[in-house]
Length: 392
View 1 (cartoon, rainbow, N blue to C red):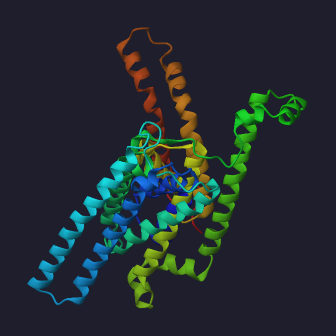
View 2 (cartoon, one colour):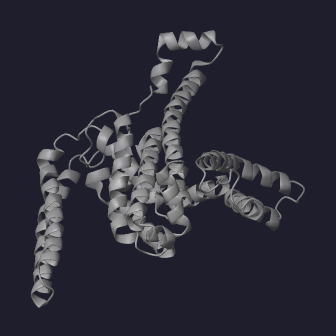
View 3 (cartoon, rainbow, N blue to C red):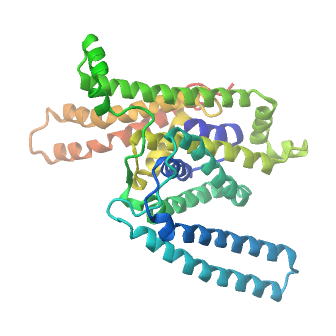
C-alpha cells in the first residue's frame, strides 16, 4: 500500500486519502473470486440482480447519450429527467426483488451470491483490476480538482465504497462478514495431522503446533515477498524511465510540463489508476491472510493515516523509502500494542495504588500507539523532512 501511495504522491503529487476504499475493493475480490457459489442463489435472484445492474448501466449510458446528442434546452432537460426517473424505478423494481430472494437463502450462514470458486491467488490481480476500474471512474470526475479538494473527494468516495460493501448483503454478507476464505497455504491443523510433517518437526526439535505455525507464516512471507519484489522492480523501472522523469516534471511544475506538450490530466489519471491498483492487490493479500472479509475493519486510521506515515517517514518519491517506512512503521505499531501498556506500568509503578492520576495514565495506555506515531512523524518532519531514504 505504501508503494501505491508513493506512486501517486511521490511520483505525481496526487493527494489521495481514499486508500481505504481501494483496499476494500481488493478484499471484496477475494470473496467474488475464491468463495464457492451459494447454492440456489442464482436461480432465486442472481439473474435478476445482474439484469437490473445492466439496466442501470444502460440508463446512465442513455442519459450520457441524450446529454451529448441533443441540443441544450427544455426538451433535453425533460428527456434526461424522464429517462433517469423511469430507469431508476424500473431498476429498483427488478433489483430489490432479486436481492430479497438471495438474502433469504440460509441468511444465518450465507445469504449472498458467493464467488466463482477459483484459486485465491487469482483474486490478487483481480483485486488490482477492481481498484483500477474504480480509480478510472473517480479519476475521470475528480482529478481536475485542486489537491485539497481531491483529497476530500477521494475520502468521500472511499466511504461510499465501504458503505456499499457493508450494506449490500447479497454481494458480501455486509457486516455479517465472510469467513472461511480459501488459503494459498495449508491449514495448521492439516499439517499437525500429517505424519511426515510431524516427523520432520520432531527431527528439528520443534513442537508440531509451533512448527505448523512457523511453516504457514514463512509460506505467507514468501508469497508476499515475491509480490513485493515484482512491484518494487516495476515501480523502480518506471521511476528511472522517461515516463518516470515526465511524471516528476509534471509534479514539480504542471504549467511548464503542459507547455512542453504533456497531457497533464491524462498522465495524472494514468498514475492514479496504477497506484490504486497496487492498493487493491494489497487489500486482496490482507484479506487472504486474515481468511475473512470484515468490512468494519476498514478504518481510516489503519488504511489511510498509517500508510501516509509510512510514505512520509520512509521518504516520499523513493520506492525503497516506501518499503522501509512500511516495514518500520508497521513493526512499531505492532510492538506498541503490548509495549505501550507495559511501559506505562513501569512509569506508574512508583505511584501509590489507587491514585487517580495513576489510574488515568493506565487507562490511557491504549493510546500510546497514536502518541508514538505522532512523535515519530514530528521528529522525522523536523530532522529528516525528506524521509529516512530521500528521493534522489
